[in-house]
Length: 115
Ligand code: SF4
Image (cartoon, rainbow, N blue to C red; front, side, top):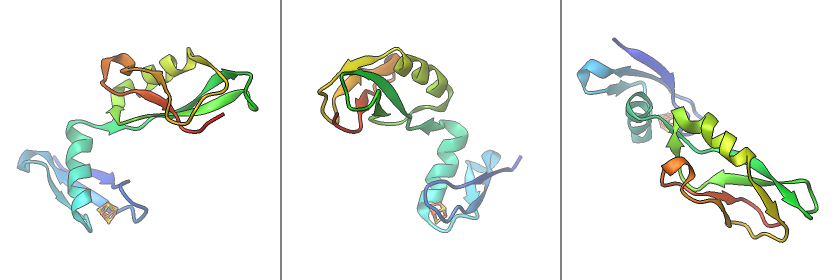
């Protein structure tokens, strides 16, 4: 049965139609990225996670963090819970690892600014 999705790979937002029984054939895409996005979204959806962690002695109470790669969509909420447990100390540099291999995904959580 056909599935419908909006491609989020660029701001155009093509309306995709995906046919799982036909090897995830994708229609409605204006470029190849839509094919990759449509297939992946139905077979192995993943997301980057952005959030903040508490920082001691920083100029703000929290410092922004991001996953260094995409994690399975189904783990996003649990990754957020792990991020919420972290407290770092200022000074900290952009790109410093605050969680190594979060939930065994192979993906680190790093700071996205210095503070
Ligand atoms: S299919 Fe291509 S053009 Fe359309 S939204 Fe996705 S990335 Fe953009």
